[in-house]
Image 1 (spheres, rainbow, N blue to C red):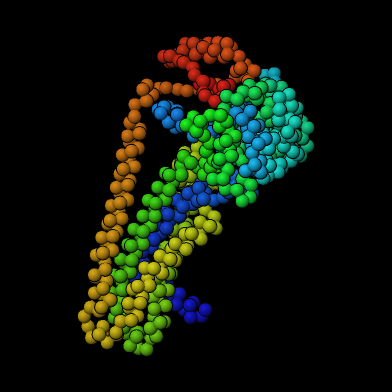
Image 2: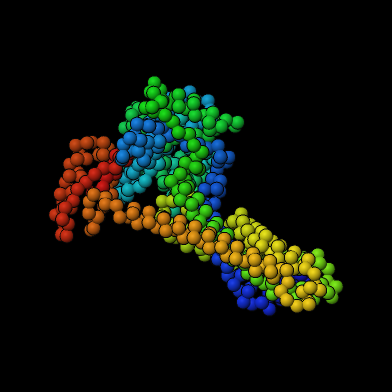
Length: 512
């Protein structure tokens, strides 16, 4: 240990004397490690880090598929994301054997309050089995019972943990209190666990009600509005669960007409961003490799200049193994310092990436630099120092001091001169690959932004409007309301025209 400390102290003094080389190497490594660590922390938080749920790898998403939709230009993007209806869920739950339990969830908007004080809030609908599937317990009270998750069941609601804290101040006596929605008066029976989310980091809706009480969907087999989640039984694989699930949900339909997609839940949540993030990770890996090759080129150049110094130390009786260890220690100290600076840069870089990224990316709220990411950064830096410092160190330590001290360029210098052009060529090749990839991505982005949507987007304003559920189910009233609203908005100063449309799958929310 004493010898190691001496080697480190000597390495620091040596690097301080070679300030130009040290500064360039540190900056190169810091930028490479910092950029790669920032991107890795984002990718890790979204794709790799397990969900904060017990045995989350066994949680699966279940969707129906309509292969015939692949022929439709508009519908093809959702051909394998068809939700379930409540009757389909009940049939599936009653007959399946591959999962410990299954659940469905949906969302809506409801008016909270009565009289003049009314507020539109998001409300999640969930089956009574949801928390059992997720493997969690309520923070307070209980979740829905099976006899409440049916038409005519007791009107009960559960609060999200964040809503309990913000609206009710974390009052432990909130259970039993009543709240007034447009559908009626509901009794609070529980509070969900802290940070529970069905959207991988997105805040949970403030209020939850039983899905089986939705009178518009409870008995409608064709009302595909609810996402399904299930927990695999121990020892059962996804591939083994597909045939049974498909047989139940497909019914008498042909495989060409309807199928089932069963996928690990976290992979399904991050499906839309997985390929772009992995592509970004590959690009930043190339950047790190370029930085490493650059440092290797610098080390080889320095090795040629230090031949006489090392030869003199060998001639004075220095042990070759000790010299090799000392030179390798210098490389590790250099790479370790670069990694430390890169890790510091990664903290700021990660925050910037999270701030600039679209909010709709799942898991963005969970992105952070933790022990795993720091270990990745430091390991990366140290391995870089060992790999690119070992060769020059061994070559210098093994060189015959007599031939070097007699004058002229030593064998190490000649090897460095021969190897350096190859490293420069490799660095240029990697840089060219990175630039070509960036150019192709930029070209694709420009083409996407230049696509004509078929209408003029200048000065176009969209406003979302929600009706109480009992009103939204009245087709005549809905048409009258939105038609009248569009006419009145069109009469406002500065408005040329106005129109209204509804969002598929969310019957009580429209746009004007």
